[in-house]
Length: 176
Image 1 (cartoon, rainbow, N blue to C red):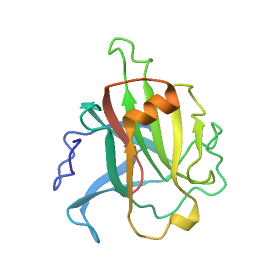
Image 2 (tube, rainbow, N blue to C red; image 1 turned 45 degrees about the vertical axis):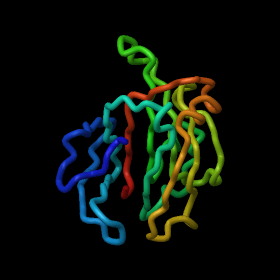
Image 3 (cartoon, rainbow, N blue to C red; image 1 turned 135 degrees about the horizontal axis):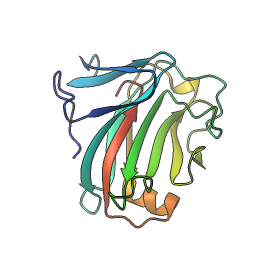
Image 4 (spheres, rainbow, N blue to C red; image 1 turned 120 degrees about the vertical axis):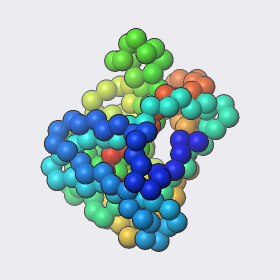
């Protein structure tokens, strides 16, 4: 288990800034028990990353809840210019710690225009695949969506990697 967010405690998570800054805060859940991670950015890009080895032979299923307040209208996620999402969850596999450029990822996204269920290669690298779990305005309802994915099967089916472990998870803006 990656863990739940504890009251006021993001100490196990590291922020990685790409461009600008995202404000990440833990807030009491309004319609869910416990704490929620709220992320807000304005023309910025960053991610929260938790480095932790997760044994996919024991726990292949990742479960989370998310909701967004809006999507980025008109952005085509299959292009570099459009590779921005209301929410993204990265599952990260690094086969060799000494070669950081050999990182593979499956990115579960709240897509802007790509239809729910669509899968496509990341616009920046062939070592990552994108999976639209929710898409566009119709799913921006203010209600939490629960997701469950077989991460091990996704790495096998989408990237051809028969892995037993991932080394981390990253999150980018949305409420989670």
